[in-house]
Length: 334
Ligand code: AHM
Ligand code: MG
Image 1: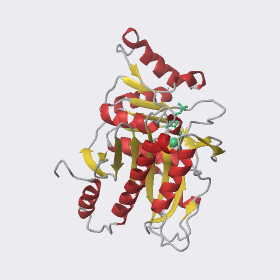
Image 2 (image 1 turned 90 degrees about the horizontal axis):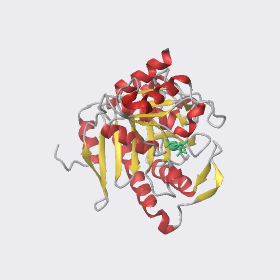
Image 3 (image 1 turned 45 degrees about the horizontal axis):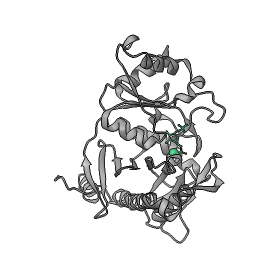
């Protein structure tokens, strides 16, 4: 492949390696990429066109929605509900499953997405993103309900995210490693710039919201204390800390230079067992992280093996560099 391979070429070339492939998944990934280009444009122009603020509504989880949360959800739905590749959709912003309109053809896939992750960062001009997870609709299911989505992360056929930062990037996996594409704004194409991304096994960088420290369990308290003690403590090395409050930016950093990202179990009344949602945040990010050689766990269970109990179920997330996440898991076992 030359250095100017674009996303369309890349997925068609991958599709040709699987003779039984119908091309449906490739077409669906292209549809998602089109939606993400539109979202990138809207995010970029949000201040100018006056859509950067809060809306008057709350989502199902009681969070005040940003105008862009609602607009980007509509962009995803409008790009995906008529192309014939999906049987149903689920979104962070919508309580129930989103059905395909009756007049449109249905396809064989299900998608879950967070249309604008990290949207609290919009006002302050930091990175935000879109996360998605694709499953096969179970055989024989023509009217999918939430039950159809209750599949463990190991059943994902594709996962990805787009980060709208200094450049817009799309990161995807279909189970053959992780590839990163940069949006060339001049020609409107995602160009393969980061083939086969891998997460270094070791790191000296952690990311956690320290303001929640008093709510954490002892294993996480212990791990972070040891990092902070640096060369003077048992780890005998100094650690660096980052917290962007935008999972897409944190996972992108981990994919690029390693690190560990934690949104752990806590006893904060508002989160009730973790903040991040399994179906459209934790599960797709776990697929990507594992495909890049990292580990993703709740501290006790491999996130990829969890079957969602509902669309908006929350789980603790600890992911990143292999040796560091293994250490944190071992602290949970003690
Ligand atoms: P969101 O989907 O409503 O944006 O919430 C998810 C985000 C993650 O991107 C990020 O890791 C986390 O919330 C930040 O939470 P906090 O504000 O507690 O630091
Ligand atoms: Mg989110």
